[in-house]
Image (tube, rainbow, N blue to C red):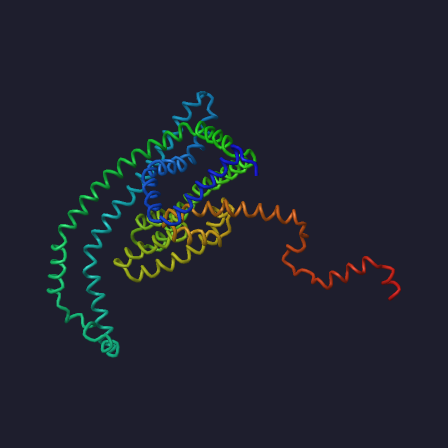
Length: 413
């Protein structure tokens, strides 16, 4: 081996990498602490980048529409006007949701406050009557099933002593929450300003990123990275627009169906279902649980029919609407959407559900391209990839032998 500067540099880099790997494997707690601190420092900018990416979807459409107006020749003016209209549209949507949600929520809470004691009393009487008509179950449960024998005064006193004994910890938690709220407000403002900066200078930032990428990595690797990033950009944009459209369609379907069947709390429940449906698959079920609880206090029978109606609409939405609105737009089959939601929810909660579906779509597209290239390179016949059974090896060898020796076949005949 020739000892020169390049060899010494490679040895030095290898030693540094070995030290880093050793530190990562043996100091896991310190590594996680350092990574957590770095993530907390970068979280406002990561959130700002996510906000910019989401707002860029409607902003891009608005800006392309403004480009058709001949009087708006300045690109900077079109960019500023598109950003203003995008923010205005988002604020109008939020105000509309709040206007529909909060008045109904306030009246619903007041109604629940009036009807909940009667509902609890009826449920208690029904439970006691069930135990009286089933003495075996009552004897099995013992004295705990006798609700009338519970000492409510001691239960209330125990709860009060528990609350008064933890006043100090509550105050500490309130102070910590206030500090966290202030930090959150500051980080939120910083994220919004960073998002606006990214939206205004997105072409410049993209060009700088490409220059940095080509200066560090080989050209063919940089080409592939940029191709994958552009694919991810298209996939994420389609997923966001498709998910929002699907949530609006689902909320409108519930509003129409609940109005037809004369169910209560139509604006509240339909808006809640539309908002929770932004979370794929499991969000709508959360909205169903909330809506069923509201209707249950008003009319238990109507709550049952609401759940039946939800299951029917969910089947229509899951089998007809979602695959065409969201699944086809991102090119991911329904089975893998379910897998992505389950894995993402287990890893990162709601944000993981929203993030992993487009990520899985990009990985699915890359895997499909890789599979097609490998099959073409290996020369696998297309008939083997069809649904019908492949011809057994013995029969194929027999046919090949007949083809190679036609004279022998004629003599045998």
